[in-house]
Image: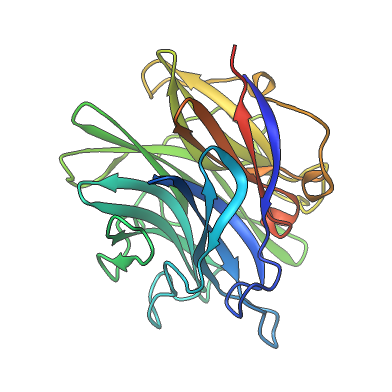
Length: 314
């Protein structure tokens, strides 16, 4: 599966006070003649070096997704209330049109005393314009269970018949590595019917390359009668470098249950540019017109912006 890189699209670069740096987890939806690409962005860190993140967006030409048409001047989704599961950050996940509204399943960040952070999955809705989202609940739609006690994040859904399937990252453990606690997480699956409760089996979907491999940010595409899952993976420790940092991964399935991993089948045509030479992560795939685009982040987990590639046509 060959992708042709089209180039870097956008970086925060001190656009606004709330959009000073990072453009993480780009997720697009088609609205009229544009693609609205949501992402998570940070304001300047506080005196302790801690930061918060909000969801913003850029509008790009759907025929030329490197051409920016508009930049959001205010957050599309702001921080949660004090003490909530999303008090210190929100990241877009699954963005889909549901009836006459747009639904965003998102990752919310908190800072518990017993761990460096916790993430759970929330839900918010907007009108058809998708400029401002309102939460449906102050609690997560996917929180802790007896089998998934640590954290989960990065949701993506696909519906087949009357069943809605969600793919997301869920933590297996914390790892003490020197002075740091690092989290080990893998991609898991949940399902539901008719907007009921999500059923989770707490079983990894994608085989790990090794026991300390982290997997994150799944998105699924149905192409030529087969499901394709794109994600990113890295080492759980010492990953803030080009050798062990995030890389793009790929798996395929005929039934959304049994997945066959084939990272080597995903190739990017063209030399890496400086913004992505050390890392490629958080892929988000969308079909529009006769094209299939993948938006993805570059170095430093998206600090250097995000770009786009198009699926090569055969």
